[in-house]
Image (cartoon, rainbow, N blue to C red):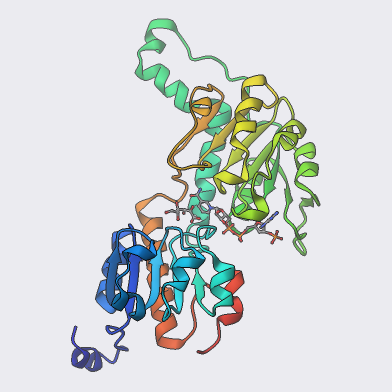
Length: 334
Ligand code: NAP
Ligand code: 8YV
């Protein structure tokens, strides 16, 4: 649309603002950016791929790739990074905020979907439904008889949530509806929450037999779920990880699963995605998903909309809709 046509609609003309999309992005987000802004695309978030003119004019990034301090420094006019995903450990948000660059993410619109997936993954891990279905498909039900009775069940379990935030609470509500008691560990106790809070992850692991990790990634949680935590979880213990892969020490987990230190694990996220260690793939007591917790058409579209709505709000009003904690102080009128 031309400047004159935007004026006629009464909608702010943002078509002169360059928005950089490094790497892949949800097609609905790309379409909407192209409609309102000047879209600049590069194959990856690597300063080497930026031509000098584009680098000077870019005022926004929309992406779900790694955005490093060096990349931020390569874009002198950058004002905002709109991350596709509620987790933003891929963005150097502390550095961005220190340089006055806003960072936004996509909270809430995916919480219920991710919580649904977590319950599905937990039940698959305990009750072996994917393996039971394969048994049927391979003709073994007719040929050999019933699938085995599963040694593990959700009945009588005590769950612990590591990262009781928006998604953690949605998981807790579901588990409680299933009759499962829930405790949690965050750095801070949640005011007014009736559930038992444990001051450390190891204390939580000692108190429960089902540990659900939905904490953010990054340095503060790197390998937080280690051999000691798994030992504390115990022989009937089950670990579910829908947070970030590097929060769990994968080598320690593979060892704990193969030696019976814990009973089973369900994982949606991995340390080096999309590479999953053979040690985990070969284990019958590991239930593995390819990072699909939010991956429905409807939820991913809602995330794409929130990415673009943040950009529009920032350039129309000077305020983002969903700033991340590190950048919240910048969320005032420019
Ligand atoms: P959130 O509302 O910010 O909740 C995160 C919770 O983790 C907070 O309650 C926080 O409480 C706690 N926490 C943060 N750092 C911690 C630490 N170092 N030690 C202990 N607790 C800590 O975030 P959310 O919307 O629920 O999302 C959570 C995470 O889920 C995302 O960051 C992302 O990594 C992951 N995720 C994965 C998928 C997937 O596809 N598998 C999809 C969506 C999200 P305190 O501040 O009190 O510690
Ligand atoms: C997406 C996620 O898979 O929101 C997050 O933090 O991990 C997921 O919803 C991710 O954004 C990659 O598309």
